Length: 170
Image (cartoon, rainbow, N blue to C red; front, top):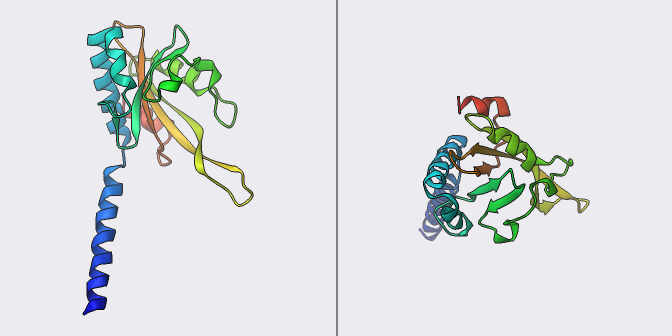
């Protein structure tokens, strides 16, 4: 009977942990929806609304991702939940391949429906030789109507191509 209770405990624990992981999975459509919501918020609130995006536990941070705000004309990150990044020059950030992904995001933001950019970000693990590991990240960005800002958010999504992702915004 004791073995049965232990087995039952492990099965229930496994089910709950699987549920928790599933809740943290953000889909590309959720990214689009949240970015659109953020763009509407910033269109209405302008510069005064930027501080809401700087809160590490604010309304624009959810399920392991967050909304960021650029000022592409000024070439800087205008708002970010990691406050160390606020004011950082967009062209100074590049992925493992030397790709200046923030500049590419600014290009996509100029499109009427915005767009997606893929790039490679370091993971928290090393390979067997002690080298940093990288994984594909995709971010969606759109310009904010009537404001000098662009808003975006990203996820680690290995399944869809950029063309498939952009089709979601058409």
